[in-house]
Length: 308
Image (cartoon, rainbow, N blue to C red):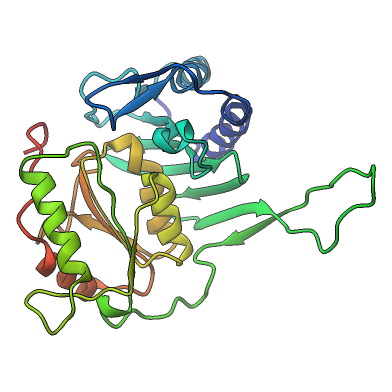
């Protein structure tokens, strides 16, 4: 097998994302099923978009493996060249017509993300990265004036290197941070108690025991777009437990190429696995000391039986 051409793969994934986008924006998600529980949703559009992407990947790259949210049985990676796909990251948002939704496409080899494409078809924000080549956001420019009656709006697009503020400002400590966390679909047991206790510690005053007093917390509903917000630099830290490789693989390489880093969601996990299901994502300018401070606020330990 020849070495993969990462630029060709990036361009191929961009075309796929843009082809799949209208299937999402034009859909009316009336058929909604549940997987694990009522907070873990899947629609016919999820399945249709994954079918489109998987058939295209297998046709264009028949020697590569495919790992998709709607068809994977294990959620685990191998060392083989693999397309890692979440057809709709943010399905709950999609069902509620909240436009924080993305198509997440990654190319992973030897357990390392090498190419990432994340596309929000509602905002037409396209995030891309290739290992060693930087991370970029391509988005529509806001028109300076409204068109006259009957005239079409002509969209022009701007491609910007990430992070958007360069050089990225340093982050002194968590009390200066805007943090993103997610509930996930486990609503009882150890991991739920760990999350709720940690959320409490993040918000608690620094004068109280274990308090971080972060400036605020966001819960936005798409792991891929959360990672892209960290890469952009408008979210400082993102802590996640319970998602899968297809949720984070594309965002992972985008963050790294924007100068940020991904470590584990538990204390001391400096070299997490892409399919390890717990992550701490930090923007450029937030160094290892921020990771260590965050780890010190975690109330317990995130444990997932399929990875531990």
